[in-house]
Picture 1 (cartoon, rainbow, N blue to C red):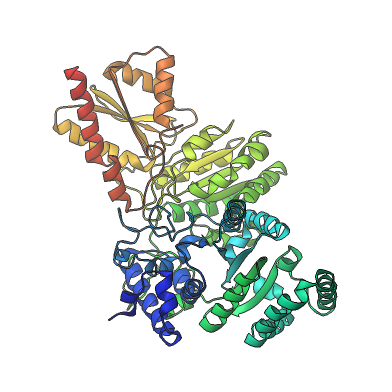
Picture 2 (cartoon, one colour; picture 1 turned 45 degrees about the horizontal axis):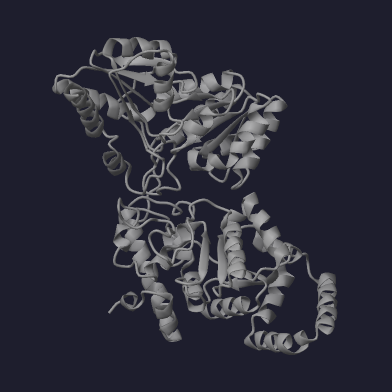
Length: 616
């Protein structure tokens, strides 16, 4: 019997004899590797956190205690140990398990965790709720070192340390520079701190000396002053945390002992755990960045790093060409150098490339400062992460009209990463930023041309483009705000970006059923050519808008409202979109089918609209 067949909860993990824990870790790694090889997913981070997840379940009960992950891509072992092994093969598939923690999926998932740097704040909120309601559960935040590049993490640390609420913050450090900052003396001290005898002594000390508060305070101050003389500063202790570590993140005995001790302190404690990404699978250990997020692959061969062109890589090449002729062009990203296609730019123009870490608000504000001083900053960022910089878009960029170019990657559906990563809201929130110019290229040629237009324009500019490759539509219509790409008389069908491919296919399906659709492609979303749209709608009498964006604030609502305000009467209006924008995980084709945004779904909806109109 596979040992995983006996593990369905934290209680089951606790019941295992210590001698079986290495077998449990090996089984977890094999299950994660084989499933991610079939489905794709976040491999290196989950493999590296296996012992940590097992230790957490030995100390805590995730069904009642609150384990808050940050970011959630390290949670695969947690899912396997909490009653979801039978469904683990559906990971990241439509209607299957999410690749991130989701409370709707299991009570063992304390909170949604798809974006970075929020775990300490969320966990502190849960701890304060526990105190106010008389709860007895424990709270721990498990934060990756990369998430500590986000400012929200430090806001949480400062409040948590100052407040004194009993909480454990586990820093999963997989070789970020913070390891060096702690220093060799702290590591030497940790060897003493983590000995069972020392921990027993500390507990006895608190039970005895701790009863006399004046004596305890005097000895504590004396200890702290002595430590300050001989040890380097530790920012976590300066912020009010009792620091433990560094701990070998693959030594289960040390992890369990340390976590158990940390939980017993009833004060803010930070446990510094050092792990190796990709642990147990040699290719992932050697190339953790390559194996961070992967598609399906053969585990016997490994992931093959290819040079497949997509919108991200095409953007990177286009920006390099512009930088060659214009020394004021600089590139900014927020911990997404390779993901946004800026790897080549970083190598060719290292002095003009700035990766600020997971700090989108800082990146936007910094770009505003660059623009104010005569540079042309291009901030490449995923749509879903740009949400964190909305205030800076308004306050630092828009109000003073700074010429910052936003390269909004992963706009629209992104697929298996799910609700936390779908680029559903950028059309709405960018459309609300005064002075923002917004382009929507549908292919590589348009991306090249629109990037040039944005760099030559004034004020805030943005291009939104999808994950993946271009489709069958290759015409370059970038010179116009909108273009009629197919004439018709029965319905005006409007779309933009990569979805124009599905829209044109839908028009072909309608033509086979005797309905001629006029297809209009929008290129500028901030100023769609309403004269062109109005002329088409007067001819057809019907409007259908298809878009990979949330309905509120989407182009469909805006165009329909503009036509209504102009007094133009329509026989029918159909708005096809991502609804409220909360879209689950699954492949992009599967999601389009489910949402009615594939060619068949668009055609069927338009035909139904016309049929219902005829029967009323």
